[in-house]
Figure 1 (spheres, rainbow, N blue to C red):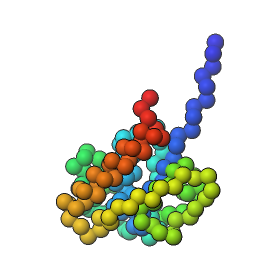
Figure 2: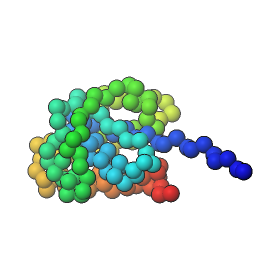
Figure 3: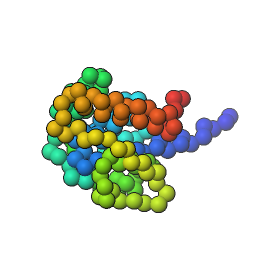
Figure 4: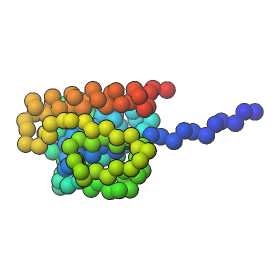
Length: 141
């Protein structure tokens, strides 16, 4: 009998923005929704807010993705160490860099203080980027 090969470790993706209340939360929500158990998803902020941006929550709810119960988290060196892919969204020099990691910087407008129409545009841009990421790192089985 042939034994099953050990399972490949899941890729871990960390989304980072300043407040961990909008862009990174929307990206994490999309990645979890689109890739499910094929990835481990983390998000954090260099200066996290107390709660998720309510307009971002509403925009994601329109897509059937619930981020309302997420809590902004502080960016730690360990979360970067634990990640295979680190995607920054305007966190500047606050994001630690480690050799051997894949880094991408997604230039996205900050949804803070913006209305739903503007946040939908940001959300849709994030969705396109996450879909491309999923196709690359966690294709359907």
